[in-house]
Amino acid sequence: MWPLLYTVKTTERDSRLEGVTFLQDHRNNLKISNVFLQKYQFTMKRIWQCKQSPEKVKSSLINVSEHVGNLRFRVWNKMQQITPYTPVTLNPNTANSFLLVSDDLTTVRDSGEDEDDHADDEDQKLPDTAERFTCCGEMLGFEGFDSGSHNWVVEVGDSSDWIVGVAGASVSRKSLVAACPENRIWGMSLRRGLYEALESPSVRLLVAPSVPHQTTPPPRRPRRVRVCLDWDRHRVNFSDPDNGRHLYTFMHTFSEKLFPYFSTSCVSCPLKIVPATVTITMSCQGQEEEEVEGESLLEMSVKSGLRVLDYLTIPEPKHLPNL
Image 1 (cartoon, rainbow, N blue to C red):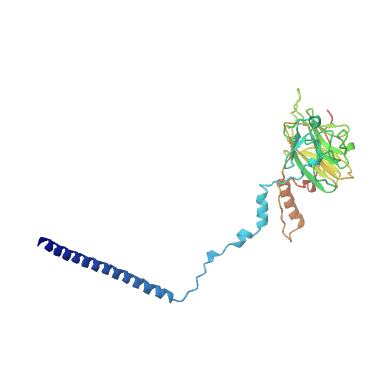
Image 2 (cartoon, one colour):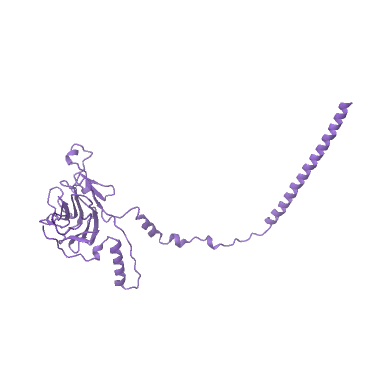
């Protein structure tokens, strides 16, 4: 009897629980349906609305002038910091075999080796072409000049033996000759502690170290030398770019193309061509030419070392007396 009553009560309880669960599920379904109907009405309302034209926003326009105006000039101006400009470059095809030239063709020094060190090594020997110097540590610049005015600065630093200047295209390259105008070389040198202008005979320059018992201090040693060639005015001028001091001027009527000339036998300190600062000067049409020209030349002479000879007056040739 008891098992039957227990079964009946259990069945009634389960039925009530199932009914409650069914009602709860049905209520939840109604809530979901109500939410769907609400979203459905909102969605349908949006679908049937007419598409409105978007409002134009002024700030959405790109300032083309700011980004594109003078773009090539600004790129060029920034590139100068990455790729500096040198007025002249070295020509390694003219360099003596024991000179070492840098990859960018702006620096040269003596390797400290003799030609005999590689006499039997065919891979190390340089071709003995007609343009190569074979007797001394000499070489030329790549570009030659047969008109106009040109200048470049050579950093000599602490080098103890050097010559800088210009040489004619016909300069002797296979025989040992003195560096002088008669042999197509116009240069300034430091040899055995003496600064000289390579005339015939040489002219000693007062830029040497102090001498005992000397009453007046000598000028400071130049660490850089500016070479100024004015082909049309027949002169080669040497000066110290750090203080503007004139060192020497050669006068000669040139009849051939001239090349930058370099010679060194110093192993520790190379000769280096100093990069030049390039500036652009602009003038407005309608202004007086003299006024614009004066302003532009002043800016060029201060900011740039390029073609200063066109605008600056170089002293007439004179030198200090022999000591």
